[in-house]
Image 1: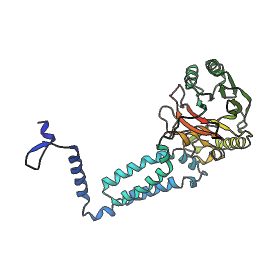
Image 2: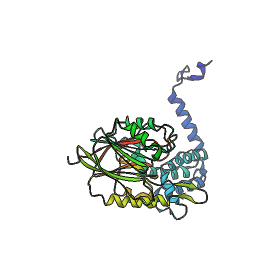
Image 3: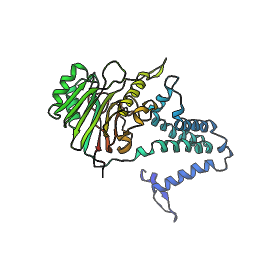
Image 4: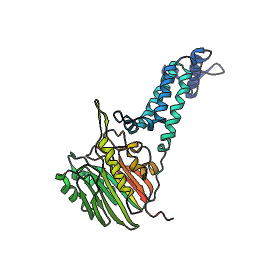
Length: 349
């Protein structure tokens, strides 16, 4: 009996196994039959079509959404890639509604999304690079800082930046990382560890009143590199105030000014910027540097929250260096994922 469910009548009147292709063709013909001769397919689904057009406009004109009210523009840009999930929903609703108008309209947001993020779907990573760097917001409430330190050290990074280091855990991180990194400096709640000699380690004023950014010169085999470590102020989504990011934006402007004044040709920025590359409030930084993930990564490289990454707010950016590969490291005891990259410092060839 079970076999008969998969039998179909053949041309000579017999029966034989039904091929999957024939079932798909019958379903397709059945679907088309419901649309043929239906004059309402262009009149139905007007609301769905309008929603599709609005979605396309939000993605296309996201930089025009004002920040004056609750920093709505920055909030939209932080989660901009996720708007793409509305496209298959609208597509399915258009099919169920049997609306040709809706289906045609859905093409517009699909094209806009692919134009914005289609390049991130491919793997652009290479095998080269003469310097590996990594950064990790270790979380002040990390239950096992020593294990987190060992995990990120095992990545093989030549230069490692850590953010959100509580004063009570500095010694723990120093002991755990000492076997791998000979040189290090901690400034406030951020630190930098290196296999290569470091000089000129100092705080960078990001207008906070306490130290959450630093700069040091790392003497790599390819020459000196200015390495910045930064942890931008946190942002919050509040019912009464929207996306509160004023202090983050002010600090980003200050960091951008410091990087713009950097005399060394090769610059690497590592840190938790509490914002994505799409967020116009980080333009002071992002306009003068390249994201390693955008240039040489695979996928979106989301880093936060670690339990279900939805945004890449942990960044590696370079100037005067060529990104070769960029990726996320395995989860640690933090609420962020570590991120790493390999860059080419000798760009003369």
